[in-house]
Length: 293
Image (cartoon, rainbow, N blue to C red):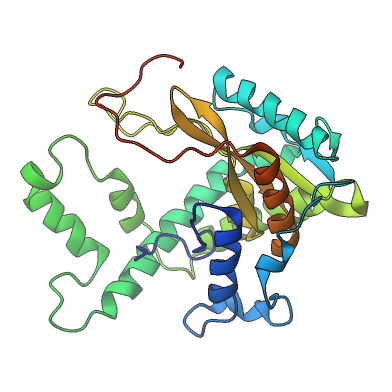
């Protein structure tokens, strides 16, 4: 299941072992959903079979924009990305390196404001569907429960995001509407739309993020680097493919496209996957790695 957080930023998608598997699952789930207003615009844009895009030579002549401004997950990940770029060139892609999208650097503030408003509204709406016997009916109820049971529910960390969301008003708030409009401008019209305008590039790439991180009592859950924000906020498609390993943990490369480019992204991702085949089946380690492997 998916816990509602931000309906304008979060979209469910397939997670699979291979691009072909992901394409097959995308075929099954793509389309309009009466419970999700955001999908209404999908009419006329959904492909009959995304697996049909898994073809040889899918990167030949493709113009790939390299978003070096999002190479922010550490030197080891950046080193993996240099191997990615070499593989792309070897598969026939043309690199536009670097390409910059200055507007996405300013997304953080308005994006988080939108998230807080929508977290409250969306979670309350979800809880309201659970019926009269549900013990918790609002975000405020969850906050109260966590506080009353903090010895077990919050022994190490608090619920600051919940509290900040509860302090927000409704989705009719001028602050929310202003932040939402700002997100659209920064991520779409001034952001990805501008980057793709005129056929300068066919696709953008960046590291998906760093390797999985340790959560500890000093740093907490400290997410380190990533490239998902622009696609998530704009609502445009992106696909992540295994790119290599850091400290024995997998890291990925994300291919980002304009609106309704899912089929093309499958084609690019499949071609890269077949050219590299770096995925390893996961194993259980006795302890967390602390150095490069």
